[in-house]
Amino acid sequence: MKKLAFALLALLFSSFVFAQSGKVGGMEIEYSTKKPLSSGGNDFIITLKKDGKLLKGANITLKAIMPPMPNMPKMDFEAKAQESDEGYIAQVHFPHGGTWQLRFIIEIDGKKYTYKSSVDF
Image (cartoon, rainbow, N blue to C red; front, side, top):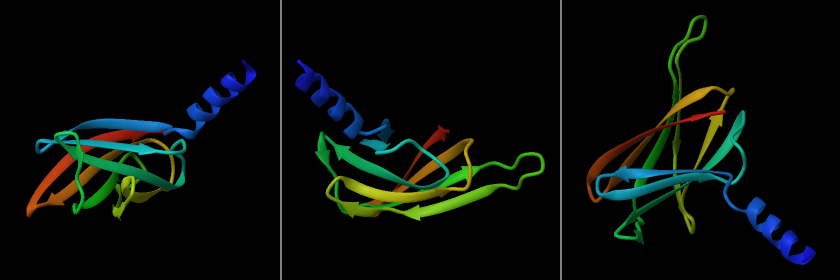
């Protein structure tokens, strides 16, 4: 019984900590991280699927934006995603916590799509 409980806990903590999904241009997009979001580098794993099949060959740019606030200018960071076995990986450096708007600019088969989302940590 203890081995089963330990295995279930290990599986829970080894899976993705954060995940969101949506639809853009007839595709399903999902993005996740393997650790909780924090200040500094955060690896976003991005998958694109169409009809349940993983899409390869896309150019994906991930923009993180924090609108201007009193005594703080607008912040805008950009990361180019690299293709990997898991889909695509983009590393975003957040200087601090708060609500960040995310823009996934996807170029595939000569067409551009934008998926909008946000994170808060």
